Amino acid sequence: MGELSKLPNIGKVLEKQLNDVGIDTADDLINIGSKEAWLKIKEIDESACLNRLMALEGAIQNIRWHNLSDDDKKNLKDFYNLQKINKS
Image 1: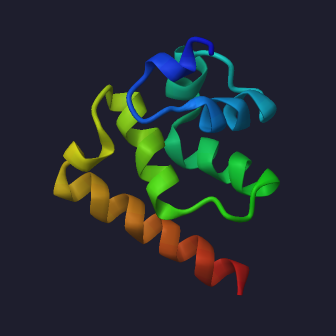
Image 2: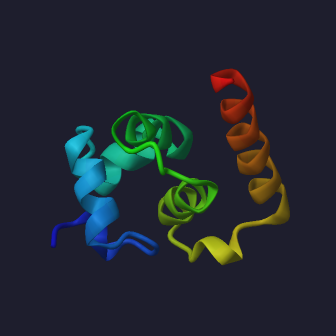
Image 3: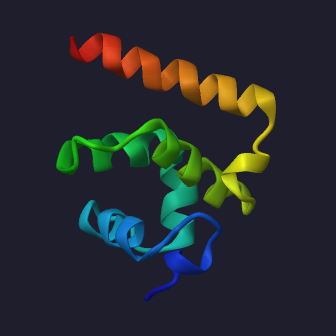
């Protein structure tokens, strides 16, 4: 396992997906942001879900995603739901 799997919420499967879309370091993830990283993963894995989006944001903030602020959770959920609507 590489650098990304040392972050909270990032296991070997998610790390591989991040690597597959060109995100190889914690700095890469921080610079691109959770939403853009999730969109890139969604292009290669249709099953990318809200929990994965929240996991990415938690990794960026260096916390378990369960501990994200209510505002962050709402913002991510709104973004996720908007993506579902735009796909329809």
